[in-house]
Length: 286
Image 1 (spheres, rainbow, N blue to C red):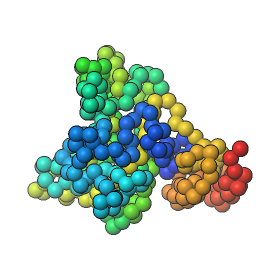
Image 2 (cartoon, rainbow, N blue to C red; image 1 turned 45 degrees about the vertical axis):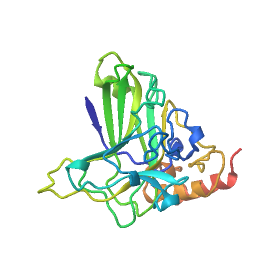
Image 3 (cartoon, rainbow, N blue to C red; image 1 turned 90 degrees about the vertical axis):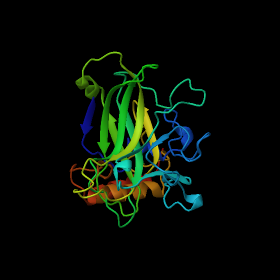
Image 4 (cartoon, one colour; image 1 turned 135 degrees about the vertical axis):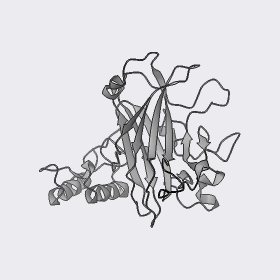
């Protein structure tokens, strides 16, 4: 059972972009910035398994890789050129070293909204196109040893160029969305995080996928996302006003995102929003 959800791309709102935190600030998702290579397979990040990817898709900027938002590591998904790469992805649905559990984050059924945030990049000059799905899938799984999928939701990124810049991503599964699935116990107790891309066309006759997507700094939480100290504190580290907040505001303003809409009239991005941000930034955090 799968639920398809419209694309959601948000630039650093007050309650978003938690993925900028250090790996130690992600208790619900192991190795969210992909900095730790696998113990048994260094070609993959620890806590993640790959589908139809190569060792070079676990990007290492220290060894010639092109893009990592923080640290030196990220993951990438390249356009498919044939059936062997029709589906590509990285998944948390893999066992911890002692085999006692999976790396999938915990989930409490109807225990609050689930949020997945992160950052993605499409290199300058490239555009994502022709894939049925490019984004993140959340698979809600039942209690082990069952592990069957209770339901799932797919969230597409905007299939567009990012001009070589990192863009933030946020998607939410609410309790209402889970209720709409129906009542099919046993209920889900964990969530698989799956950045993926999938081509549903005909390789012989349809336009082939284009563009490469990189992912970094993911974050999963059930409950509230952290927020900043005021309207200017829109990027982590929170409670510190710095260049990341300025960059986040400019990006949000240019793309008419909620993070930059801080003054009346709401729904209009104008000089009052810029003034409001500058005033809040200069006021500083308490």
